[in-house]
Image 1 (cartoon, rainbow, N blue to C red):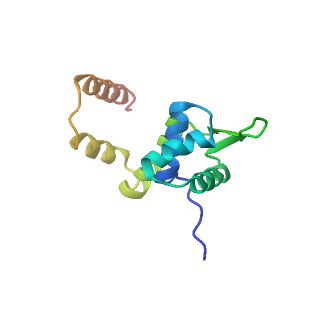
Image 2: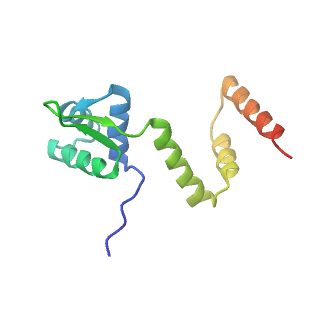
Length: 129
């Protein structure tokens, strides 16, 4: 039985999305130049990955120009949100605060980040019944 297609981008797909988010719409050769530098892949692999991403709805292709130009079909925030939702559900049984506490305990926060976290907690507390 074939594995169902994942909605989540793979590592290489995320690399390509980051390239498109940073550079904006780009032809395959420009995308490949960065993928090759990071992963050492060949051109045909980059083309194949873009085709898979097109099927998954992660990128769009402008066929009215030559060479064809690809652009991200999802924003960084949207992709990150979907991946985060999946992580919360699969690893933390839907308990988002468990993920937040784990993330906060594993890093050193700046004062600005701590202030933002406090402001978010204060706003959440005000919404409690």
